[in-house]
Length: 466
Image 1: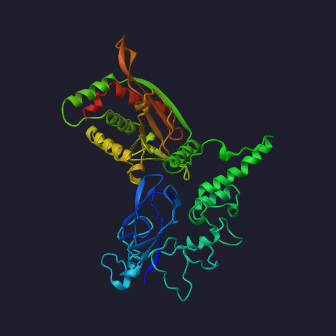
Image 2: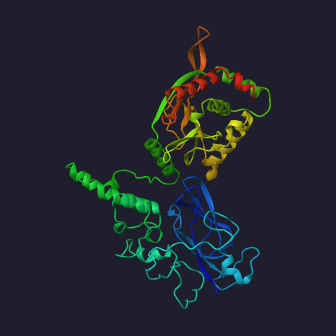
Image 3: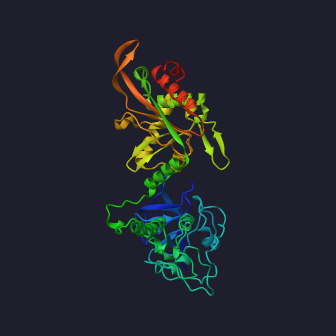
């Protein structure tokens, strides 16, 4: 007899709490195998294909493409032991499992994402309002036959227990709230918003962060207009509204946090890059793999951080301590069709210019394809931002939290320059350093930037070790 199992959006790691459905890889009625990818989702970090730990027939999907779901929300249901035409078949087995253990084995596949796929039974999650009556789980668009009615009510998963409260979009007095994310609960609690008054737009009426923010805006806008003696404005029709979610939302949150927590300052200097450009041209003319300008600048940054380790650090605000980091993991800003991302080159301080060139090229191509993993985008200790590719000279970069500094590089163009006492046309670049003023003062930051500029102007000493 077929058993209908619910597969929820798993914890994708790196502290991610939600993901957006980009593309369904299966339809209702399709037969899926254990660990077969069923949906492609976009998180704040990367695009991920999510495999299903069950084998059977897909009986329902929750959420259309473009829908944002919190971790733990239902993704789909699978009739384990059902054939494609809806009849009972042989239960799907994980490799090496005995038939008697089919129902258990199908829940523990070999594919491990955080939160499922482990070898043993998962710990039961604490149910919200356990005193609430059991609610039958809906299986819309089901193709498998109905499961037999159990003799006694079965325990209801936390997400399913929200269905009754979500029928009208709001919670009944004393009933469970149709919200899963603790971040959404905290936002509402901090702003004094009663979640029972909020209508959810998520699957089964789940209340999402966007619903809470919309309710807060609706509550605060009329009050502000009345206080100012002006008529209330219909914000829903005031121009195009673009949701801050996915990568764009993650960038917004990170930049806002940086500006909120980090007292940053910026210094800049013009440098004569003629010798650096000539050295790179000579290296590439000698044969072998081509060396990129970004790789040479990365080598210079690594040497400068060895002299000024204060800038390769982070601040532990809870402990009120500066943590100096032993390795240089260099992030670099990369513009992609999805937006700005910062891939990280591991152990940049120990790499040659050739190795750095290869790793920059690999990560840049991966970023453009949208297949960077969360590991590729985390763990940086210092960021190099080459905004000169956009044809601009200078900028005041925002520090990539929780790092302590970022070096910005403008375009390299011919300019009048006094060289050896005479006016000449030289290749000039503007360098800017934005730094966390908690980790050092202007003397250290200025010393770092001046050392970088000196290496750009006279790179021969560094290039001997390439």
